[in-house]
Length: 473
Image: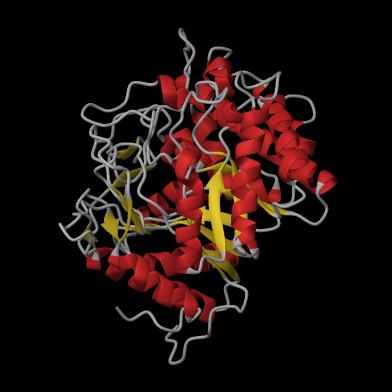
């Protein structure tokens, strides 16, 4: 549909940005915080560990003041499980409660709505030793954690996100250091999707609990959703795209919204005797959960062709950026119509609109963009400037397509790109920067840790001030 005139962004649109605890806070074992799986994993060669990150833990007042200067209406951040419960269960760390109370209060002081992610890739190391999501008890571990968050912060936090990128935890968990495969596992695919099942049940129960404890609050999932294109109009390629869309996207949202497994994924798992086992009450729990909105991360689309037998069976699977495909399901191919970032990710702003349209057509729930952004090598000049026009152009194109989707009739709550401030990237460390705010440190040299406003800072400030009406550089 060609839109001659674009609808305005909603009056109370949540303009802001995002971060995650383990990537931005630092102070990873300070003030009683226990180690998470991220703290004990082997980081990629040549990248920083997570001891300091951007040191948001000690700079949060300064950083939130800068967000307020940009005009943020919202700030999406996560709460580190082990800062609240150092062992994952048991005794509560009051200093952790105090820290997040301070962060929340600092946001509210400036009229910034705190949007809290409950779990962002940081399972407590103590629970990893007990099997992590492989252990059926993980459902109750998470629900217990959720109850503490709702009780401690629910008087001020009105918007909650359950599990960040659960589909990435499932598809590429070993790559991001978040999946524990028990030694001696014979059917790895079944094990992976059993863990995914426990997460789905945990999410569902947390949603129900939120509505019980906080009737005025809103809660939703936060998967990474990227529409999958067929490589051609060949019918077999269309089937391949349907397959990958199901495995990558709809499995997670079909369950979160409708409480049922996607039929294509269920049939595929059945071929490998990998359908998860339901515990008593699981089916009812998942049907009883009703999200109020869908949070989602978007970076790129994927393109696939018919799987011609050349893809080896790999139970771990993979995301569109680092996988050949899935045997018998699809083969990933390069989309020659799209450019790439410095880090090899395809750039597809129109795909952003297409993804939003498809989600809204399927689920008819309000949607909140919880991540979208450009990772790049930024350079701090001698006079303290960062000229990141490339980031501005990326965000301009995506925000324009977001407005196109709103004009198409899609209900959007807000835009919280990745990230508010430079932080440690999961694979590329500190050198891959996403923020509006530059942090003066290198991979291993902490330097001054001073904050600098990038050009994109001033640009985004204007975008927010005009409620998206002025995207010019």
